[in-house]
Structure formats: structure tokens, C-alpha cells
Image (tube, rainbow, N blue to C red):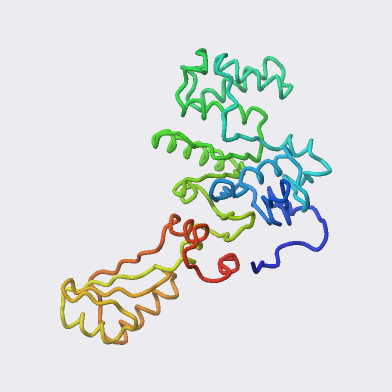
Length: 332
């Protein structure tokens, strides 16, 4: 795979504007390569989403960056701290919510919060204050005195994230946080993530829900076979998959015929007086199309832009569908 020149030649600290900076991360288990030299950079105060099929290496990446396991090669800085030489400083700066809830169902929600406060060495009064504020923030006050075993899936996830925030981390790793939640609870969690980011927190999100990444992420990377095969904004990624087009509709048959003659590579629908032509949805291509219509003295009654969604991107990059060469380079 052709890679862009993003890896530094010397081991230097990450720029202060980057919450996460990782270069050349590798991890293997036996003869199976899980991560094959990936690079990741995440600006502070943004949401970065890592997509990939099961077994792609998403959770392994989170475990390395959160110091739970070590990489075989490569370097990474979290909040400016080297994960290999200063793991304690990294742990003090981050919070991690894994795929499986860390909530203890045998005790109440409030007791779970106070336990986390003790683990963060907060004083008794300070711990109670922080716990009360977070329980209110996550709409868990009414359930705070009840055993967490009786909480719904969405409530447990909110409590899980509230517990993660007890230490006031500025970087949070959310590893598939909405897996198994119903649509209403998932949307509630999206609101929680947006609120965190509006407060300056950086969120590293892994998910298999493509709509989730589309809704939340400032940048998205697709991990497949241990490699990052594409990275960009949601709109940039959608443009690397073939299938985007513009549909023009006319009410005047004469205008329809003039447009058909003026435009190239069109698919004509004579019955609907509609034309369809390939377009990636970019401003440049749309301007070129409109210029050609203007030159022909034709005006469409309706113009609709259709671009591939993240589902198309995901299957194209991980399922063998034909895509342009070097997609990672194409969107950098």
C-alpha cells in the first residue's frame, strides 16, 4: 500500500495541538499481524473514529494507546506523554470505556461513582461532590440509590462513562460504546459525546455503527487487515467510492433535449425528462456541470446530488468492492 509521508524520521514529542499522535504502531500475536505500522494523529478537542470489521485491530489499537498492552514497534504520545516511557502520566490524562461495562451491578450507581472517586484518591467530600455532579449530568440522580444490576443498557452505559469522567480526563477512549443499545439510547449517548467534546474533551471512538461515525466524528479512519486503508472526513471518504451522481430533471422537453446534447456521459430517462451523470459531489465538478448548462442556455428545474454513504465506503474498503487505487492517499 502506498503511504503518505506522515511518519517522522526521529522520535520526537507530539505537537501540543495533538491529543494523540502515533506512528508506525505494530502488534502481532504469534504469526498473526494485528496492526501493521499504523499512523494516527488526533487534534485536541475533536472526535476521531476508527472503523473496521471484527478482528481488524480496533480494540488492540485502543489497548496500546491506553497503555493496557505494549506495541511491538512504533511510538505514540498521548497528551504529550510517551506511552512507553511515561505510562503513568498517560493514564492520568485519559479515561477508557471498553466494550464491556465496568459497572458493578451488586452496588448502587452512587456507590460505583464513589468507588471510582476512591481509586482516583479524591477526598471523601470531594468524591461525593464529583459523584453528585456527574450523576446529575448524566440524568442518573433518581436511580443513584438503586443497584446498578437493575439499570437498562443505556443507563449502564451512561453510568460507565460517568465513572470514566471522575478523574476529569481530557482524552477519552470509547471502544464500541453503543454496542447492544436500542436506537433511543444510542442517540442519547451521541448527545453525551457531543457535550464532552464541546467542553474540550478529545474522544477516540471505535464503532461498527457507520451512522455513529458519520454523526460524531471530525475524522474517520478505516482499519482493515491491520492497515489503515483510508482516512478523512466523512464527506472525503464518501467521495472515494464510485457511484456518486447528479440527477437533473426538466419540465420542458426542449430544455431536456438541449441538456442531453450538451452533456457527456449521461444516462437519459425520456419518460421522466431526467438526466443522470457521474459526479463526486465536489464543488469543482458541480461548477463545471452548471457552466456547461449555462453555455448551452439550459436551466434544470431540479438538481439532486447523490453521494455514496459510509456503508458504501465500508464495504468497498473492507469487502472487495472496486475502489480507486491508493484511497488513503486520495483523501489526505
